[in-house]
Image 1: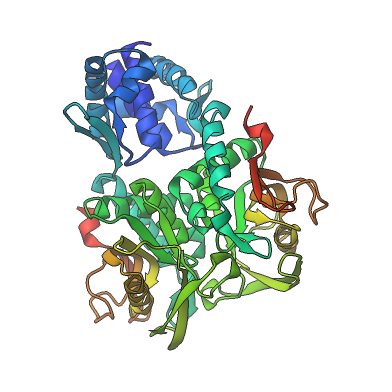
Image 2 (image 1 turned 120 degrees about the vertical axis):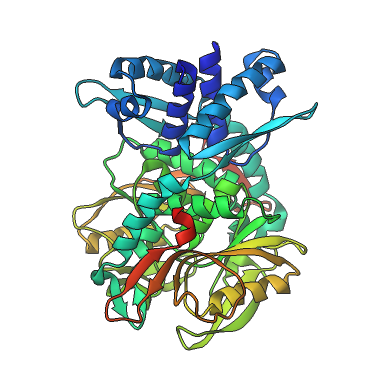
Length: 267
Length: 267
């Protein structure tokens, strides 16, 4: 196989296995050539990846040196999509009343899920988290894509305990937007003590359900390493939780609802 | 940019955008070179992809000619993973009684979800479906990955009508495994009449919930283009539905439970 073809094969394998480490020896054996040749191939792969805005190639040197593909999205690629989706989300047809908007289609749309997943994966790549956590149902698509891109397991908290979850731990929490006590439930097997989680949720108003997830993690002696929320209503108001990273801000205080992308993502 | 680097950039962009059409002019403009050069680059990309077992590059010729990446998984790559996961699923610690096994961790594990999603995407690539449908909760990860790889929207049917879904259509169905009437509910906005759906579910025993999804689609004047199930219990027994495509067979009729991969996937 010639150099250009080898470089394409390496690009494809790395891109299909985000955030997974490959020792140079893996490719050397695959192509039956020296590690020094692979290093030269990787130079091409790395420079190519730098130009796409979709991900970069990280290498570690030394005898146990390896390579990984870190998915990314440049502001230049993200901005036009963020603006387009902001406009879609602000469509008056989506307003359901009582502060709710219809987002179910977007939360399962591959283009939207890929964008949100890449933004979260990029934002949380440097944390020491070892899992992604969400509560059913609408945020599962984005949380799963974030977990896939970070190569971490996803843990889905249920609303009700299910027989297929085995023994569970349940907590009650106060949801400001539903103005009532709600319940969440998680299998005892789902989380190891000492784990660190990135919490992902699709929509936040008061922060009750994210706080519920933080409380749930504490029951497992696990920690919150970061919180990502796709759409935050009333950004700037006091929330039940500390810091969080939003993709969209939703403002329905005026006569028409306004949706804007997190300005940090546009520059 | 040199040919090898261009080929890597094309490989990365195609791999990151599964089943999406790119006209040759997109790359010609990006690199500022002739379409004939891009065609030569694509020859390298195509040959490289053929050797990985992870996907192939399809080109259509003519003035409006374009290119797309079709994710795939060769039996050679899939078989060892299918055997490993069969063994994991058969672990006696997973048995919960009443015919249930604990699969929640695997259904949200990126390696498992990627494998199952690729197998379904490969199996259903040739159907004329335009969406993927599942019912909450555990199958959402695999269904989302299948939808992402096929570049189709995912529609998630809920168990209960939610305010954030707007007006919904609900149906009742009989679940053999839970031995009771269950309900599912879907937003009226979610499905266009005339759509064709690939139904994905994580576990099937009698086929009640898949049949419920088929009935639900009929309420929307939509059709079922195929059914994919991750784990089927009692394969070969009469089900409430017609044909389906399973990845794993689960047999708990003996004293120990046995899990085997669909033999068609191992050759």
